[in-house]
Length: 250
Image (cartoon, rainbow, N blue to C red; front, side, top):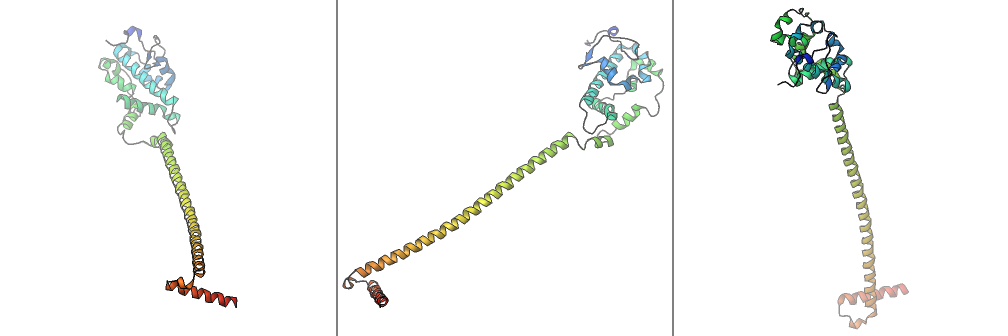
């Protein structure tokens, strides 16, 4: 059994002719429909004709569909997509309604689909050639292709902002890597310079130590007795050292 109450409790309030208790569907009251969609309420083909009140199920279908559409419309008004103007709110709400229900939100189409109201719908005036239903059907015939309004309102959308944020993060990481490489290169260069300086100092120390050892060897040779020198090199060094000392004394 349908959770809604009998027909007498749910008369629709279209055009101010009947009243009904305050009920909510999907968290939205029926009064919100009248305040949120004034352009649709003034439609003469729907609200100025009382014939469709003869069928309760059809009235409930109109009410539930209107509540759903009002929910999408209130979401668009509360958080409109970036780049969207107020003139496109209803159009975007119809697109959201179609994407979620796979049905077009057009009152004339709802009346034509209900077989039990064929007599009442036949008494309605013919829709004009440039009605909103035909325009909506033409727009919904190719949902995959983006429209001009859609391309105009998407350049500064949420996706582009997220993409810019990701690109900024990547650039910051690259900059940190470059700074780290430069710091590492400077550290290696300074370490190389310090290594060269230490090597030069070590070479100088080794050279001084070699000279000191040579002088100590010469002194030890001069202090020894020539007769005790059995090494020819030591003997030659002794006489050479002695000749140099004698020449320096003169």
